[in-house]
Length: 159
Image (tube, rainbow, N blue to C red; front, side, top):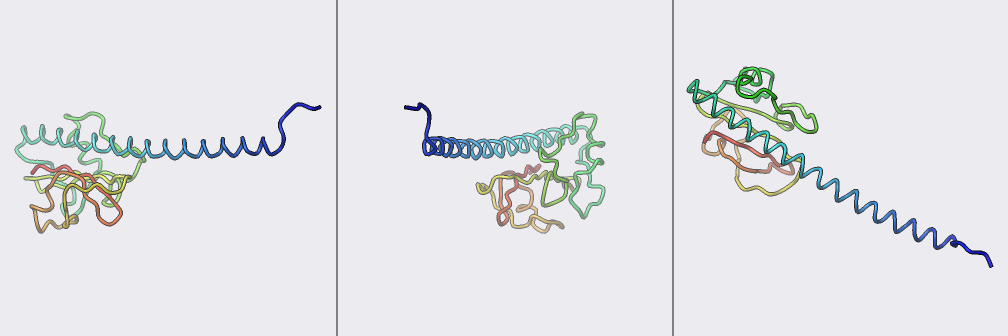
């Protein structure tokens, strides 16, 4: 009598290992999304603290290089380099335009720093005016998470 595994037994074991591997991949993918979103929120809050330090010295916030647009350009990083040496970048290296990555807007008296999250859902504020020009400052300058369609954002503002 030969000792060993039959083909059915081997296929069964391979199928079980495949199911377990797919469960692990899905759970680690979800954890990575949460981790990157946590980093984005931390980055945005750090920039907000930096802007507060800048405001104490200059009595205004840095203006956008092009006031009618969102911007997370080298301009803002260079302006605040004395307060923050390592300027944050999106964990997935997204560009800093509205719709992805980090963005900044300021009229000099108020600011809004915004990022796009990978996770969906979880709005705790309502922002209907999310684009420029700002027509309703009470709606625009809020701090919290909001979603526009299936895209969720985290925003910190000076108000």
